[in-house]
Image 1: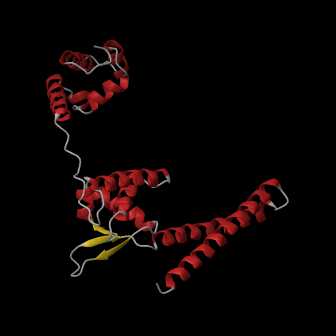
Image 2 (image 1 turned 90 degrees about the horizontal axis):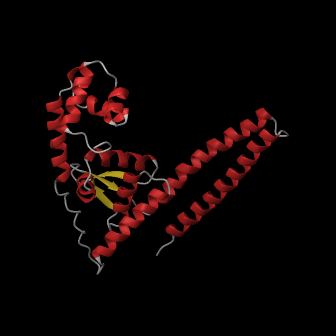
Length: 237
């Protein structure tokens, strides 16, 4: 049926028409399919010179069987102490992950950060994260590298140095904002330079000067907040 999945007869036709030298667009027209569908079918089954209808049909059946397998159950809700409702913790973790992603964090980085956030220790190993999030170690590694570059976590070695732990603490946002302020300083300097080159009395130059002034105010405000935070944390509790 046009628009549905390719049938065995479709694949026999594709093989025959490829042998005749027809292009993807013409084959697609004859089958009532987009040329991109034909190209994808041929490319993943040996290419124009190696395409075989029987082999392609068998591969499609294997893929269909894989799709029909029962998906793995969701990860169990972690047990939680302190009288917490484990399901409520799990639901909150999911919603907090979505919030972090809405703020601009890549999805996997948001999942890793949220997982760390809801632990009392504020630290997990790569193996912990793989088990919790059900993703590959490579996915965890990429997310951790990104978060580390943003100053949002740090790495520590377990006693004995056998395993690496990823740690977040109360200073996470402090480090993240510090990294942002360092970028602000670069933007301020570039904006001042742009204003000087373009001329501060011109619209373009004035725009750069205004941007530099605003960023300078924002940076000063953040630095004052950071100083207040450090002073408050330095006070005995």
